[in-house]
Image 1 (tube, rainbow, N blue to C red):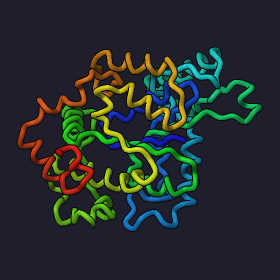
Image 2 (image 1 turned 120 degrees about the horizontal axis):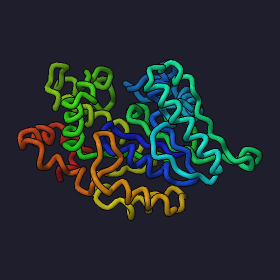
Image 3 (image 1 turned 60 degrees about the horizontal axis):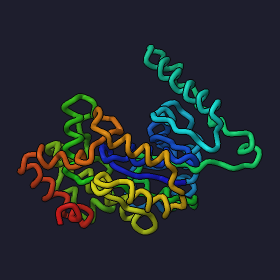
Image 4 (image 1 turned 180 degrees about the vertical axis):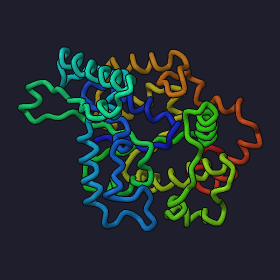
Length: 316
């Protein structure tokens, strides 16, 4: 299993779909949005995940079994070795049917549609399974618990420059497609928050930029402490400049070959800029904040995130 952890607005869907383009993978898009797992464990741990190993394993099993329309309905849809062409077209048609039902105002009906894997018969009889790829922007605080679950997981932490994250998030707020930054709540009780004395430095009346910076810093620090020990930490900004060589190396590290369809996906995705949630991005899109953010806002971001090494790397 490959698990990609990230903050929102950090290029994680683009990276995850790059993995999803591989003919041997089955991509699950943010299954923890459909199943929050509140009955098993918290989102933020004040004293670490000790004692939650079994519950984390149960939750991972639930996420892997998730076949919700939202989890499987993010295009583009790729050809797979474990699924014949007829089944691929049938499955894609079912996804678009579900989306049509949802847009027609029958969301409760669409919610009940399960998207089947439709594996080739030889895969079903042999017990072979696709390589599961999960991407989440909600699981940074749970990374330690998930990696302690006993499951075989290749973990990736994708970090975007905090200025790029803040600029993109606030752009979404202005457009009305992202919620206003929420209170930090239990995030201020975490190990990272105590280490950085965050509770004394931030409050719920802080400016949006401050709240977003602290959220980026604390959430990614929590995940980084767990993933850096046994996983891979990547910079989205570096990947976006010249993705293919670096992702080729990443695929090789994780035991994946390099298919031509992945090359084609990366070329198509870099052909130009799309909408706010589009997978298309030009080579310079990740750095757009440099010309868009006011210098005083950049300095405010720097002052907050450079309280820890994870932020200092972006302002070296």
